[in-house]
Image (cartoon, rainbow, N blue to C red):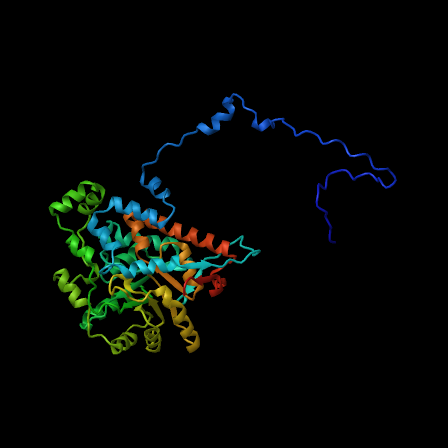
Amino acid sequence: MTHIIQPGNPEAAPAPDTTDIPAAPAPAEAPASSAVPPALKRRVPKYADLAPLMQFKKPGFSKDARLKRASTIWELRDIAKRRTPQAPFDYTDGAAEEEITLRRARQAFLDIEFRPGILRNVSAIDLSTTILGKPSRLPVGIAPTGFTRMMQSEGEYAGSRAAEAAGIPYTLSTMGTASIEDVAAAAPNGRNWFQLYLWTDRDRSLELIERAAKAGNDTLMVTVDTAVAGARLRDVRNGMTIPPALTLKTVLDASYRPAWWFNFLTHEPLTFASLSRYTGTVADLINSMFDPTLTFEDLDWLRDTWKGNLVVKGIQTVEDARRVADHGADGIVLSNHGGRQLDRAPIPFHLLPEVKEAFTKDNTDAAIMLDTGIMSGADIVAALALGADFTLIGRAYLYGLMAGGRAGVDRALQILEKDMARTMALLGVSSVSGLTPDHVRLLGR
């Protein structure tokens, strides 16, 4: 039954019937009241009123307190910068040449407009998804990063364990500082992926592939945007070496960051743990790792060799996305290597709608993943809305690692999860599958 409610006070008594009562003459206009409302009268404050306002919080200087105060990935970055020597921080934070690509990638996520729906039931937000045949509690995983224990001594162990706890995939880099086997042992219930640089030396590549399969990795991610190393000028200016060298500059830098150096000097020295038999210099390693002769025939060899999920990372054109899928890839990562290879490279977020349209037209079911520039949960939501099946974070989790080790990575993932849930609720979307291109508009495009 519909109730009709008239405006006014529903609890007021009904007005009397005045049909037959003559109208009274209008009263003279009353003067404006000068009475002061009780709430505005000054008085001497009572102790009972002041007591709740005088409960001062004790300042927190512990790692947990420091991390808890961080509400964004950018704030974790600020903490990381204060606690990490310049060379390893810049290795994470920097990009190639003038770093134009990195700035554009971050700007791309700012140049959007969300288009929320109203009057939707968003009392429960489901951030889970399925990627490459298995569930993930969040639509984001940890991307492969090299030299990770140089950023903070817990390195890959912190990243893989945090990913395991969060129910998301973790990708170990060929240039990681923890071995395939050690990461598997550290996070035995996690979903571990392995990233490979495909070399001309097939025996070396095959050894890593076999180790990855034996350790339970279900996905192999081959990186294809590194024909040669990019010009990472911050590293050149910092004279960065692996392991870090004790020069006058690094000693002075260490005086402001004693905790980093204490951890670095009291743990096992850095090595390329996936390359346990390699004994050459870092320069020789990179030259052997980045093979400029690779072609799609090499990808075919890898597809025939690896029987698990095969993902190709470093896709920067629609044409290459299609070709990689035609050659048997189960997924692609739209990525310009975090802006660390070719400066002025295509921006993955801008490329995403075109690739999604092409895959839909071709009836291609290869998963579309995206990295580069992600610094918030809202960035992830925008990528999913425009067609990504999944996202990967590199710098965002490394800032957390440098800010507080494993606890810092946990905090980074918590921040992203909270961001995603809030953004989706405000968009009027209760699950990842409910996100569509209608929820995002690219400004100026």
